[in-house]
Image (cartoon, rainbow, N blue to C red; front, side, top):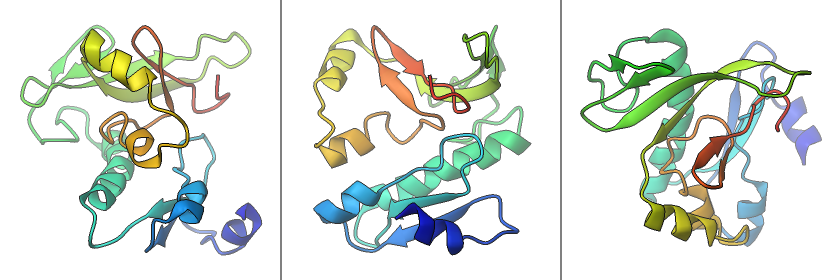
Length: 163
């Protein structure tokens, strides 16, 4: 699969998104967000009949907006307040955190977005299986711009070393 997409990716583009108009089981397996450093293509289920298609695109836009805008919230457009490790939006509660990979052989600095979540919701999130595509796809409310894990809290995965 990836060789097809790599050969059909525009060499001059930073990112190429391939849209899948149908979301059956086979298409669900092909879904791939460009979330690793150096990723040049993504494969997303995008239809006019599913609001989550808009949210999937919005997730990609977040990444780009964060590269350019430093004071406005990428979600609602309001001014964010500065925090110790990034910025927080008082309007929509989105948190943008800047961190460094904890692995000594990587030390990559990156941003991730998240939101405060209750213990009850964290517990429910832990119970979503890999095969439950729609719940797994929307697990972080389409606000995750790097891979995330659900542990005692939401934990980012370094987009460079993937640990």
